[in-house]
Length: 523
Image (cartoon, rainbow, N blue to C red; front, side, top):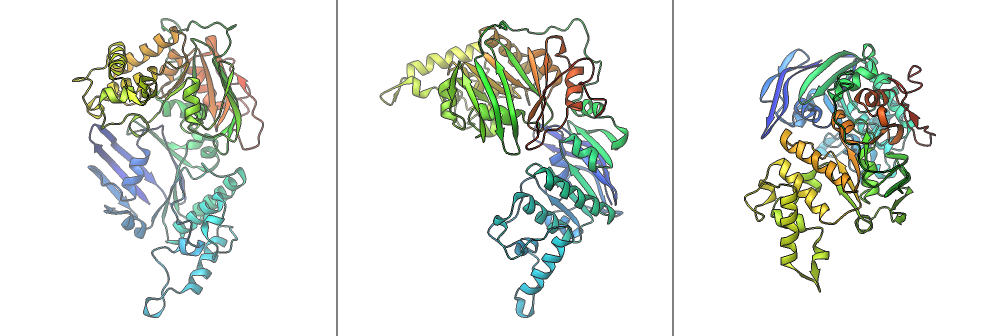
């Protein structure tokens, strides 16, 4: 139904797609998977006319095509359902279904009677019974997602692309969606399914294509691919790659008898976290492992106050911290280095000096006036300590390399003299040399007694940089690796074999013993 050959898309400084081949066949559900930056979103945008490829061909129903706009792709029969429902909440269900293609009567007037009948028929065919005259906002998120699906199918779609469609659905709604997907497959529609949840993939998908760094690293029947092998393909690591000897690993200076600096207890947020608990002691680096969407980032954001949990507690040095409040977390000594430094970290238009001093300004001021001398001393200290390379502290931080931008962001939070440092993908998007420097800094900070939480999609980085690793899946802690258990083989085994978490389910934390998580044989 849809084939791409040798697809290449280049953006300034990055090759998002590199010679990608991909085929979606009629009557099949094809999983498209990969970690952040693998190229999934770029490929979808090329298929749907958002981007035009630099090289390669796109063939649709046997004929070469090149969509100039998303509207052209939709009119041809390629529909996309996004993770966030892209409908109009204030309009009725029927208006949303037919938005931009309303049935008309004489003189161009909308035929509401026909629109309501056809909208009702479209939803009933998917097993959804709802008053199509109701405003969309009055429906549950799951029903809204079904309306988006009905809209996608009602345009006589031949290919339906689903991008993380279950991220905000209840388990019951997920099963309803899977029933609809099987119905579409039986009708001969090609379904491209993007998800990070392995259990869903194996339940509903026929084929799988794995992307990594813009390239296809595997494609074929999903049933023939073991979970452990699938995880290793996504992460780019092979089982047995890690040498048993000769690996230098930082072990920290903490004592098992020391009191935890950070304690997180039963952090729960609807559809995101399910009773996450862990503790970090002085000088300890605790890694959070798992695939994209496992709840790693949500966990540190909840600790840092950037995500408001529905329940749970956070303590720093024995004192409870008000959850859902970033100022309260900062005052308690919690600092978060976010995953997306450009969107949530640096201020590119400000100088290196201004970016470093930004968070510490209240402490560097008297009576509302900034003490410029103290600012200069703080900035000079951290520029030297972190070896930040620039044309000077007044150079705009947006002009620096990715590695130096990351160091500036790290310097900003170190200037706050934190007790807990949360690092979300601290080496993503920086070169090898800068990566090694950041890793060295993390080790030095832990040696100084700082409590560190480290998130990384690189198994080697996570294993070599952590004392303990908590493995998450579907927003719950499903395994803990300690001591000699902290290895790449056991990390990937835990990710692949851990049982899924569901809303309201009791999740038992298991310990890795041997090459697989206990009970993995049943899985």
